Image (cartoon, rainbow, N blue to C red; front, side, top):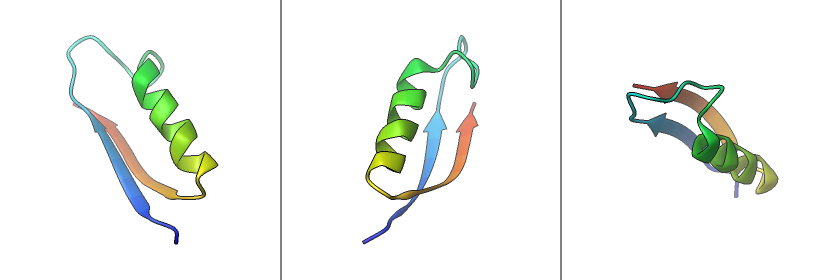
Length: 42
């Protein structure tokens, strides 16, 4: 079953390019054939 996932990172020091944990989660989401529908950093 494919799951739609939105990833939210709350930080004052990271960007999309430097968010290592977010990048790992994105990779794991895709490896499991789920759909990343949104990714934001606030």
